[in-house]
Length: 461
Ligand SMILES: *Cc1c(COP(=O)(O)O)cnc(C)c1O
Image (cartoon, rainbow, N blue to C red; front, side, top):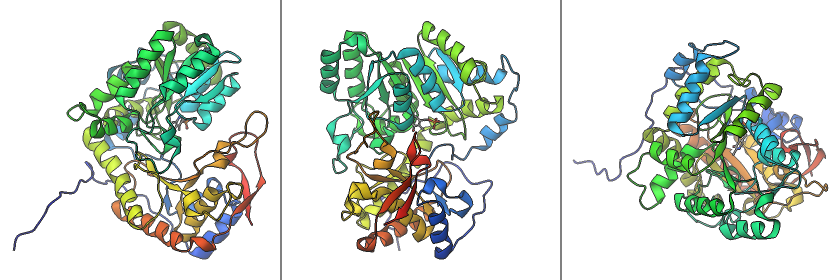
């Protein structure tokens, strides 16, 4: 008999050399653990977690080549060899001229915001990111969302939901004047939209527009490689280009960048700021000494810079991204088969479950996404996180932001879990979905001042 293979499966372009053993818990243990954590998955102990989908940040599995490079780190205080390797990798693969390493992405945002933003400036961006917007605000700026409307609609299947709405930007320019806009804050594969890409056509249009008004584009390039994968898969004219080529082109259309290397660059800690402007670089080199460390290590060990340099190259391999995003899509399709409401199209770094649709009997003040994340943990030990009203925080005047999207993020660490883990996650989501009507909401009983989602505590209603 002949096998009828129609479609061939993808698989990871690596094999496993070392494993980390996990503790298996009972439902009773998990009920106790989440209660003690104030129903905030950030406050769980990781040893009580079976499959950790809290974040794809710093949770990457490094390759043998990265570990090999790690051992060659040059820990000199000044002029480390490892710094020059990192600088060379960034110049080669991303094309930015000047770089300042930082301990992670938000440190780069702090420095860049301090340099470029004056009090009262407007910072348009394709959806906010928590730390990015906070640093813009702490520097005196006001964030303005200019992402296309489709990004706020969990049902829209727009292939490039990260795109900038140029008309929204034009309105801001007409209203405030270009001099009040130091830069457009452009994220690739927009995190809070659900890992949704920006198209090259949109970026080119944005570049043409900003050139007219002499406004910079600062690139939050934390997930640029995943964005490039989607351009390759979805955008006319890019199907034959490599991810390397596409990433280089994206970066070439921008003036500078902040990067959390803990995501796409396949390491556990690190980041950098990059710019093509000498003046900005000079100031950044001054400031990094105050907040991070000397400009040739910026808060990182030499070994970290080595691992990032290797990780950047590995992240731009076409087979890596195909397996990376392929695994996320596998999980998403399974959840859809079970009827679990998720944001579509499936994004690059995780599955975003629409908590408003999942728990329609809860109001936004009863924290549907926070509630669902706690229920997922109780059901299977899978740790997810809230991306909704808790994450959105409060405005300067103390009022809550009420974001349209109320999501639970199932973020997939890179190169960490297997397809069998994905099955367990999808089955657990399906089970919680089946008993959704019996799920009660939460009230907030402790609220920290900044980035409250990290440490807030809740109680069951
Ligand atoms: C993680 C992240 C940051 C901040 O980086 P850290 O390394 O966590 O400080 C900035 N922007 C985006 C889009 C991110 O996902």
